[in-house]
Image (cartoon, rainbow, N blue to C red):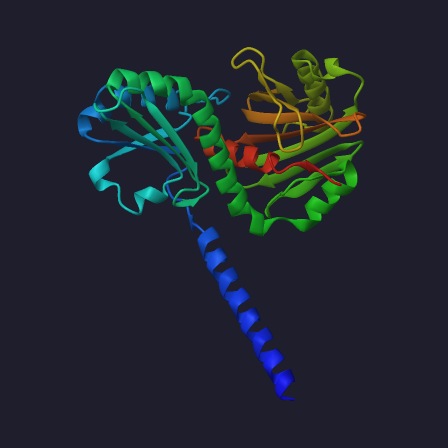
Length: 335
């Protein structure tokens, strides 16, 4: 009995030790939730002259460009600013950080990047350079990749926000119909589900947000040609998305804002073609932005297209479209 008691005591001690180690690991892994406004970049400078001078100007000129595909002008990001002496623990949790430093003692610029430094999701870039001219040149060489990472952070924040409210019934229906999963949050309902087409809607008194998913046979890479993508889109929405008055229907605007296309080799579901643009109604005056992703399934037999669009007249739509984009980025082929 004494021997058994000793064995149990040792096992209990090992179990307690393992539990403590796991607790420590979990505490180390768990980060605070990142802060900051939607689509906001925080630039940390050493003084106001850097912010008011060419450094601040080049950062603002890039990130505050108008976002393509919106009916009213809206900036891609808002650039906020503080000096390093005000960079306290709260600001260190900002989601998108650019830290600027001019150090006359170094010869070559230094670029340091870090993901989830003090919070999650977070991306930080520190650029240290011997002069303002060198700093600007270095930023110019990094800015496109940096924007992609900040875009990713915005998507991850929305995905984290929506994940607890996923509508399991709609997710199951999408999986059954198309063999993909997509995390649609509560508040949406399925308006149409037939002929390899699904229209998923969210309606309020002042706004309409929607997704559509459709599937077509895949023949060859010409099916992902931009002209073909728009031709197919127009035929699908004309058939399934009616306007509020007789003989009105959705189409793709090709004059005011022409559709823009981008290939995404690392889209979560696989190689995809992104389409951004403006939809409008034939026979009516409604319009709004959309973003879609067309992906070939793993068997190379079907093309799945998933699209989100918004109707919110005379209001800003950038952040709502980011929400739609983050949900579309949750699309994956079921295994």
